[in-house]
Amino acid sequence: MNKQFSFKRFVLLLKQEAVMNNRFYLTFFSVLTVSCCILMFFAISGMGKFYDEASYVTMMLFFGTIGGLIYGTSAFQETRSSDLLSGYLSQPGSILEKYLVQFAFKIILFFPILLLSYWIASNVAWFAVDATLIKLTSIIPRFSFSLLFDPKIYPVLSKIHGPLDVFVTMLSTLCFAFAGSIFFDRYKLFKTTLLVAGLYILDMVVKLMLTKFYFPVYAKGLRIKVNEYESFWNLYNTQWYHYLVGLGGALILLFFVYYKLKEKEA
Amino acid sequence: MISINNLTFNYQEQGAFFNGFNMKLEQGTITGLLGTNGAGKTTLLKLMAGVLSPKNGRFKVNDYVPFDRDPNFLEDLFFVPETYSFPPISVGKYVSIKSPFYPQFDQEKLSSLLNQFDIDEKQKLTRLSHGSQKKFLIAFALATNCKLLLLDEPTNGLDIPSKSIFRKVLVSAVCDEQLVIISTHQVKDIDAIIDQLVILNNGKLLMQESMFNISSDYQFQRVASLQDVPDVIYHESYAGGYRVMAPADGEETDVDIELLFNAVLTNQSLKHKSNNYEQAI
Image (cartoon, rainbow over all chains, first blue to last red; front, side, top):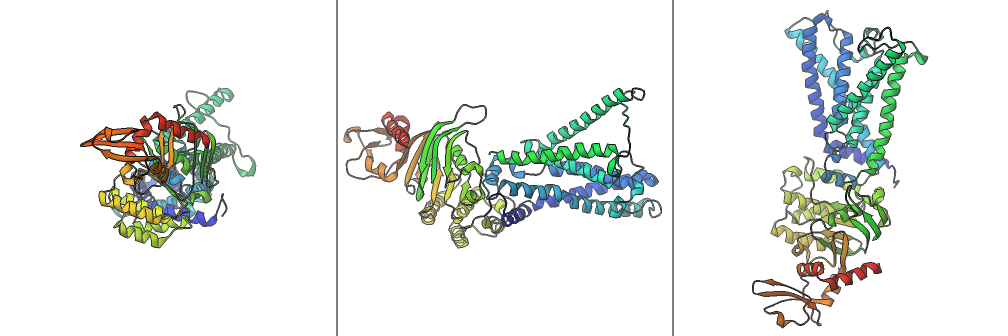
């Protein structure tokens, strides 16, 4: 049998992950749905007519990022204790197979979970507000997946130009969290959150310095000015920057996750 | 089967734990790995299982380098750690998802072992007592029919009848192609089943000898007075007399492993013999 990858072993490892950790996935889905539903209920009822289609995207980005951090750092559960780690490392299966199983469950599976959870939560919240507080039928549409791909809603949002921006933001956060799950031995979520927040602050500081250098007239306090223009492939320069930093960084980390797993000891 | 040459290993921020360590073990034996706390027993088992990486030296198990964690190597090895935890699923479910990873897995053997250990396949693993969890893990390990079984303190947490069953099932379930290494402090639990003894101390191999050779070379007696035995190598007092280790005089006696262990730790001449053995490897 191939020592790097065997499809049969990979399927067995997938099945094992699903059976052994199904309680975690169900709990995550339930908690995400309920918390999303409660927050959306207050957001819709509180904002009333100011809650528009774009608000759905902002909310999804918020839940996708926070949820992604929590979900991503739950990868490689067995590395949390040396008892489990011995069993995990001596479990038949190549490093590549074990890595791909975690990638499938903690990166790929996140998006169907998020979309389904968000669809249920937003519709329940909409019906709940409609039935109890405000008649929403003529004010706010119900959430549907097609809404995410409606280009009309994006120009009103600052810094988000389209669904790809939303996806890239969530994916890069998820990948950073995935990496944090194996790079940190303890307090994985806390340390990863600090790391992501630190990178965000670093990004702001760099932009602030560039603003002061290139646009000294606009630079007052913490104001940041970015000269935005449409670049190649119909993408803005800021989008390219966003994709390069977010996805590029995430891809490099994903590569190192494999080597970290390979060198892991119990 | 296991060949260790000039092994060096240390934990982070510690000096060399194993330094120039050599050992060779062949299949077809049940080997008892003894040592004081911190002697390196668990570390050695983890190195064999590939969950720790040696810093230097040649380390081969079944012709594989353990830390490469080749799947073909891992499917012929089962490591029962001292402490473990299980997912909240039934015994049967656990078996159904884990057993396909082991090509030689014998379901009938497992059912028989679980029956002897009085474990129901429908029970949830997390609801089993610590002792029953350990019994299940041992039964599963034996049913995998892996060439190398590493058992770290397998009798810890087992009640007296279970220890007796453990000894019985181990002897009956292991075949000539297998090597079983049992690391333990509970020498009395394994003295009747092991056929080879390895004694470690501070990362050094003090003794590696077959039980046959030990019983040929030494005799172990309980005597009222030390004058009753000429050439005493080592002795310990107990209520009513002395436990004595002496050179064999033709009459074979049961090996008192605890006495032998203490003798090896304290007796320079025995250490010398073992060191010579190590150098010979």
